[in-house]
Image (cartoon, rainbow, N blue to C red; front, side):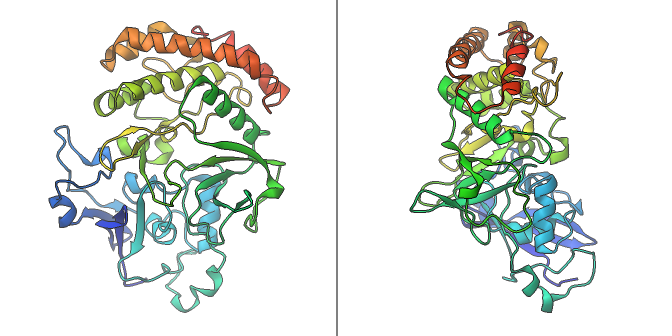
Length: 409
């Protein structure tokens, strides 16, 4: 095992703390004194402060995993397996995954080894450190991380307007989402739903649906199924390459990605926005909540809601992402999280929204007026655009049938 066991954690390029392997595959996070003592420090995450706004500084060690906030910077599922295999690292050993992938993480966090060592030991099979061979067999590794399950890559836009995936995967300002192995037409589905959300007036990044053949440098070993890829501009990267800090609600609530369907409700998200955000955030939240009920999106879990820190300290609701109609793939699907008392789309009515308003201390009329306006705008744009959007006829029919079962529709 390598002697080096400390990773520096940087926020906006400045060191703020360390992740340390303390032996036995146990890791612990600690803020550095300069960050703790800085009254103007940038915010790392809402979960790092107590109910009085005081910075928390005492954290327990974690076995094999890193603490949930940092674990949620890593991908899940097939993307994690793919990147770990390329880097020759056991995908369960998150400290070493962050070592390898920490150059380009979601938000404004970067993670690097404290002694400057480029690669962690070769731990793919749990074997000993083989440092002399660490470099040659990793020349094709991709050193970035994007949260989520779907196979996706960070890409740069060329002068010609086309997209290319960098050799290391690092530094792109666009996300390329390739077709799903399990479900047909996901890029077309996501583009259609995000386009509708944009027409209704939600905060949607720049999006496109492009030919896979037009994307340069798709890594070896990636199945090139389907013809189209969904691309979306990264809202955590500015045009000049500056990183903007974000965190998702799994990070806020301190839960691992596998628990993203548990431990909180849409009402709880509303409570955070009521305490930390502004009226515009609440309007946007109710719009998205209503819209995703109308399209039958059963996958709006904790990792599909994020906050953004435009001034490095204060939060707003981050732009929309991952809007997909799941009822066309999973008949009878329901909300990923309870709205307030129920997950069923058939229970999404004004009474349920009134319950959210009461529990989150939001003005009921404000919430209901926003939901009603969203429904009206949805029907207007659905009627006008449903035949023009690139979704399949089966998907269109599934949404039409679903709308008849949602009371608020």
